[in-house]
Amino acid sequence: MKKKIIAILVNGELMFMSIVVLVPVVWIILSAFQSGNALGNLSLSHLTLNNFQRLFSETNYGTWFVNTLEIAVVSTCCSVILIMLTSWVMSRFQFKGRKTGLLTVMILSMFPTFLSMTAIYTLFLALGLVGKPISMVIVYSIGAIPYNTWLVKGYLDGLPIAVDEAAYIDGCTKIQTFGKIVLPMSKPIITYCAVSQFMMPWMDYILLNILLSGNDSKTLAVGLFELINGTDTTNFTVFAAGAVLVAVPITIVFILFQKYLVQGVASGADKG
Image (tube, rainbow, N blue to C red; front, side, top):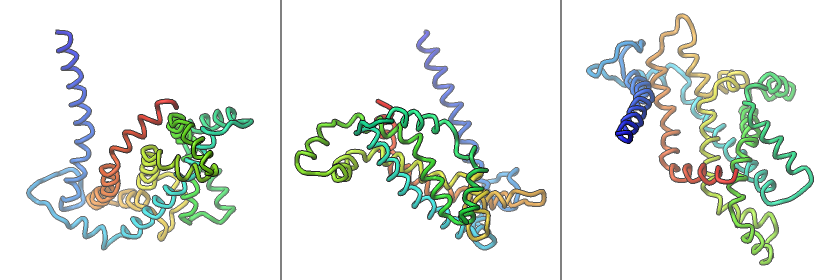
């Protein structure tokens, strides 16, 4: 009897959480195909693609999409390189200040990047980088190091050191061992870091709104929010259409790399 009650409670909780997650998703998808501008009345009998046509004809959605994609791809490549190098050094080498460095990285990972947005804006303003996509690439690449270093280090600690030593005996340098041995064995954790970093520019708003608010440098989050940010703005269905399209690349990436994501998180947390 006790097991049945537990099973009912667990399944009830799962059903409730599924409803909480799925209802907003279904609502925004149906809203994207509704006529008019309001989100209140949903109907399956009057579906239209007009909102998607308006999205591309009345806004700079294409430019926003390209800007976001460029930042996502470049920042992903840069951050993965920095994360893997930092984690490899922390995992494989013993040097003075290593423990202090790891502790510092752990403390820094507790603070979100937007807490330092005033300092970041002032610094980039002095460097003349405000309004340029490279500013966000720098923020995302550097900001990814603290948390992910501990995660990736945990994964690398699980790889046998004997493999590295065998490569050294065969004449490989440390960099060659890193590129030919460590990286191929770290595909799951690399995939996890890459996907998590790729997602950030698509959903981030605060820093992007501060650093990239120009018409030619806006990203999707900033551009779409302006469609509904105002007392006289009623482009809610157009906003819904844009939100649906934003989810497409993220969903595809998750489907393609789902197996590696699960392996990366599990392995990285094993000895982290």
